Image 1 (cartoon, one colour):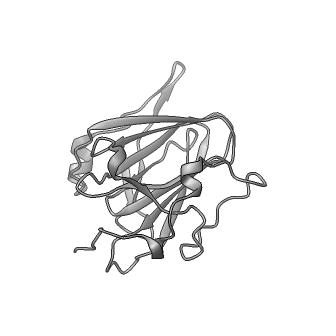
Image 2 (spheres, one colour):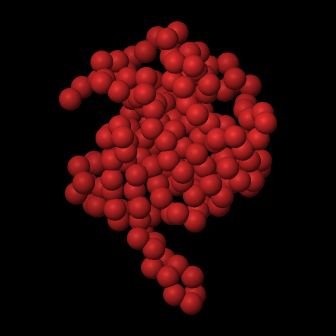
Length: 187
């Protein structure tokens, strides 16, 4: 398993090894000890699975508020996504900046989104399935988000469709500048 930091080094791209033969393939997609060896001591408590029927579906930019904030380990089992992490930690040198990666069933990559980051994705293919582990159980009362097309964040979403598909909730999230932010940067 290879683990490499993206341009915001707290966000990691993880590449599990695939062992293939005539039968298909085998992969250890999560190995706690290997992440711990890389300094990533995370306790995942819940697995989530989403299926998006249409290409151009956007989910995000999501996060949970403290004390129920979540780190996420995201992978794709069918299709592909443009995955985004936005640094929302006040005082961070990369506050308001984002990183992105293409995660797909074909490239077998995963992305680790730490606490203090908003997370979003856009499906690049129909019938895309995303699985992700989280370090805290879902809680509706602390579920939060930022507007997917906030001009201050300036995410360049792929032009998969003319009009992206979003939930009503995701269309109504606040801008980063209007968000009462509890996340703080610490070294």
